[in-house]
Amino acid sequence: MFASVLTAVLAACSTAQPSTQAPASPPAAAQGAPAPGQPGAAPPGAPKVIFDTDFNELNDDSQALFLLMQAGVDVLGVTTVSGNTWASEGAAYALRQLELQGRPNIPVFEGASDPLFGSRMDQLPAESALYGTDLSYLGAWSHPRPPSYQRLPKPPYGGYAKAPKAEGSAVDFIVDQIKKHPHEITLFVLGPATNVALAVKKNPEIVPLVKQVIYMGGAFDVPGNQGPAAEFNVWFDPEAARIAFTTPFPDQLAIPLDVTDTVFYGKAEYDRVTAGENTPITQEFKDLQGPKFAKDPNSRDHLWDVLTAAVFLQPGLITAAEMRRVQVDTQYGVDYGRTLGYDPAHAPAGTQQVRIVQRIDVPKFYDLFVQELTKPLAR
Image (cartoon, rainbow, N blue to C red):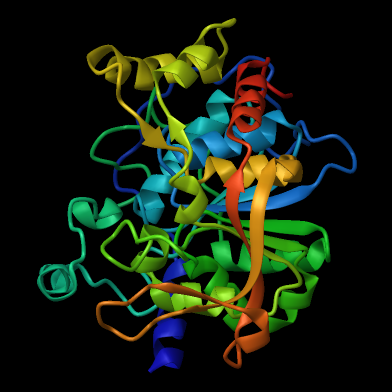
């Protein structure tokens, strides 16, 4: 069963959907942007990352990417996966965001559009009735899948990017880059882990060559946000999360709800970002977040994925963390998608060690956040 599903998903990841409509003409990219194929802004010796994401516009994923690029990290590529958005939507949004930040040279690969075992959309009402699943937020499953990354229901902020998505499979890109840069690449897994699970199943030889994997996902000592048990990224594709967490990568770090639930973003933080000189980043904050805070100055949200970039750049931000051996419950029931963290001395066979972040220094985090997002664009 799994082998047939895996083969089908790999084939889907390798097949680009044709566009039947030309994209809208976007406004010009930021001045001074490097031409496609030319080196980006990362200095020699900069840490290398692959950014695997269910990307959206100025959400936590995009802000995490801004933080990494502004800090001079070498972003080798962006690979999209369905979760908060469809993989095709994420590709369109990522291309446009990179163009606006003067980085169209960073390739964007559209990845897995469905979880390993296929969509559960039709089963969600039953999940809610039986298991208490919260259906108030369903991410990509809340709206139809677009026909292609160039044909969204609504164009990205400012229009479609001039650059097309990269040809080929997101899974193959991950594999090829890890082989090209052994022991150098950190994988950011900021959405469902489908692409990463496919990569390690297809090419298990890459596992010891990965430097680090950083997840935003899981809920260990707190309730889930998709019901009583599961955090959204894991809930969307529990089987992929189980494969990823139980793969013996040399170093795994998880940013779960346990810590993200303690960090709030509101108008005070928005005002700090938008108070200085205008840049493409701060202008986007004003355009996309300004109306919300004008309507409700008391609005607050979490920054989930941004914390992964922050602790990667400044590990000293972590004030509490614990090493546990992690498993994901994939029995279809009330605990479907629950992340389980065991004492390493009393853990089930097959589990792997993951450092689970429990708290960070919030004031220092926001100092870093504001410092990087308000300075001139990294070139």
